[in-house]
Image (cartoon, rainbow over all chains, first blue to last red; front, side, top):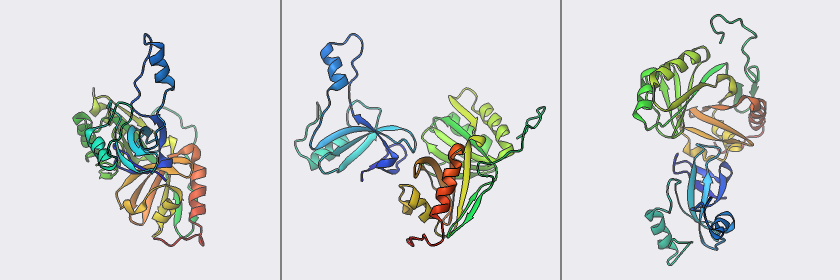
Length: 109
Length: 194
């Protein structure tokens, strides 16, 4: 069972109250972009064993989208943060670094 | 409620016609209840002022209920409130809120007829909710509110005291809600954790 704290209402939500939204921090490439960028935007996804960033929606609750940083191997949750950001906040990165030294994920580390 | 100048087409009825079930917790459908959805940024001074002026009570803190002069104000999300009031006051309250909000970016709507309301009464009220919703009921003292799911349907509930709760769901699934509450509260089905 996965428990995530919604950063908007502060409620601790059980997985079934949430709706998974796939990988986080994907940059959208639209009209005018190269085929390679557009393909990467549509199809290329991380599949890490370890630190991962995801989007979730508190669908049965406040209805807000948020981000979660967690470990796919241990299901440990490093933290959740608001959706209005292009990259994980430093505080979350620090928490991950403390537990998984030397981690990296896409362009973040 | 009947509007002035319009003929009454039928009597107002609730989703389950006031159904009741007595188990180790009492389950009953509430009488007709006024419910108003207010959407707008709750951190906005204009929204806060309008709610205060019409309701006589401020915007509740996150995940809590505030008692107001004419009912309760429920925190539903960072940009949504549910106002519970007398059924026949809802239309007037909507007009008052819209007037008070003025140009503030917001939406107010009377949703009384779109919802069903149920009451749980009894010392094991928390247990009945814990059977159906993925909530740590130890984190839900009197005066707290949560939107969640009850088995397969979305719902909101708030603890009216430590031994009672009120549940709101869509009217179309009112029967499903009543049946699952009744089944969970059947005598002989006690878990005994509360």
